[in-house]
Amino acid sequence: MRIFRLFLVGLCFVSSLGQLPSQDILALLEFKKGIKHDPTGFVLESWNDESIDFNGCPSSWNGIMCNGGNVAAVVLDNLELSADADLSVFSNLTMLVKLSMANNSISGKLPDNLGEFKSLEYLDISDNLFFSSLPSEIGKLASLKNLSLAGNNFSGSIPDAISGLASIRSLDMSRNSLSGPLPSSLTRLGGLVYLNLSLNGFTKSIPKGFELMTQLDVLDLHGNRLDGKFDPEFLLLTTAGHIDLSGNLLVSSAKEQQKFLVGISPSVKHLNLSHNQIEGLISGEAPLLGA
Image 1 (spheres, rainbow, N blue to C red):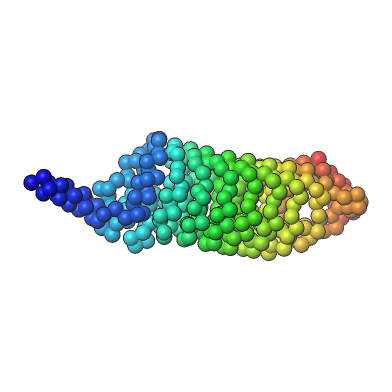
Image 2: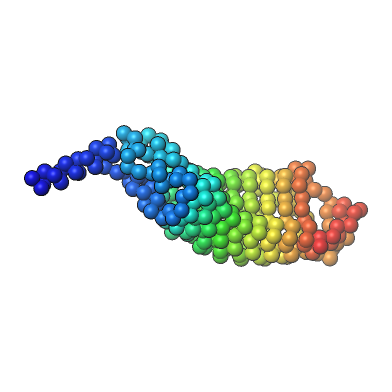
């Protein structure tokens, strides 16, 4: 009789799910365990085993989008969530294309298994409490098109492996505690349209090559400690429309002080070089002071 009762309990559990929990569901429930505060109940009141579709994908759960029987997107932006997040669990979502949880109070690290997120095209964890260095595994996200880590407390340098982001179009690491020189491997991201590394602690000179990135439209490096001689040829050759290098320690050479800029690319619509140590003349006429 006892065995029969156990069988009935197990049968009820399976039937309430429609099937045994998939690895996608188990991964989401594991993430849910780290949520400490959910003032709207968006996750805690929705993610449960009573609302799973017949194919095993919880498309009725708030913030979850499915493709067939697999989770394709997790979107938890602007929910005032407080959580300790283990992002490594999302590597079990083998068809995950979008992971976005911007503007919350979520802490955690970028996982060492980041390279296992093979399908990921969009990752936005901006304006949270994440901390850690950037793992070299980040360069294995070959499908990633949009990456925003802005407004956290990431530290250390950008790994050379960043050049592995073969599909990247928008890269925002602004407002962190990143430091060290900018790797020249950034200039090998040929499809990059938007690059924002502002308000960090980057040092040394700006690597050559940004001026040859034909897709680049926005280059924002303001508010760092970049030094060395600024090469005005960059402004002649670039196809970018928005360039902000203000608030650094850039200087002009003695020769360039006589005629700092002989011309600017017609693509440039916004240029800010203020609060540097650049001096000279623009096209031999107007004086330019970078202080």
